[in-house]
Length: 210
Ligand code: NAP
Image 1 (cartoon, rainbow, N blue to C red):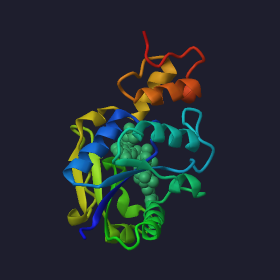
Image 2 (image 1 turned 60 degrees about the vertical axis):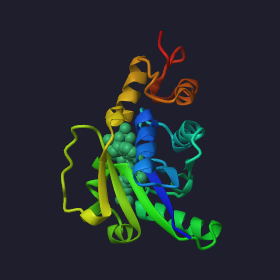
Image 3 (image 1 turned 90 degrees about the vertical axis):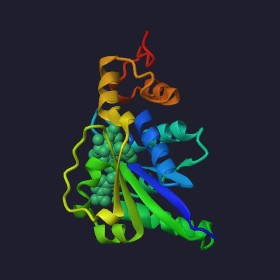
Image 4 (image 1 turned 180 degrees about the vertical axis):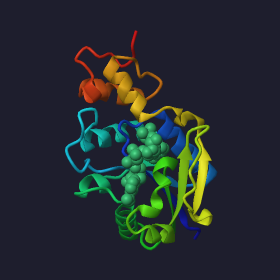
């Protein structure tokens, strides 16, 4: 039986936007993945800053955003583990879960995240273990120059995704200033932001604008 090919899409998703979804879909297509598991990071180590959303709200937005795509699912492993999120723990937890649930089926693992975050991977906890078990895919915005800190090229791929010119920072700033976020995030995510008044959304905030 051929091994399953599973991507783990790690990020804070604060909030998840269409760039993340296009990136996951493009990586699934290019790398012939069977499944992409979105893993929102745990609670910021200290209380989240005022312009950040709590972990449960980020998890809920990620579930709503990915619900319609049968290739996508969301895991709580990083949300439910206390302390800062280390990717080596994400990988260990998901490998252990797969061993329990997929009865020994061989799996090839891919970890997908922003190339900015990946550029620092050599300093991440237990980086050698991450490289041993996983192929890393850094997705970049157009025109983004990746500083190459000596990543092992055989285990790291970079992919430019034009839709990633959308950024979570920009979406948060738009909400704060009352600007529309229609077409930048899925409509369910826009409704959750307004309903829970995330990112400083005021009570009269209309995410679709006029
Ligand atoms: P971040 O600093 O919030 O984001 C860095 C950049 O990457 C931003 O431009 C961000 O754009 C983009 N980005 C983040 N996740 C992305 C994704 N899945 N797809 C496309 N672009 C993405 O980084 P973060 O979200 O906290 O961390 C990213 C992942 O790396 C997480 O899974 C985290 O656990 C892991 N990480 C691990 C360690 C460690 O093990 N020591 C250290 C750092 C990060 P947007 O803001 O638009 O998303």
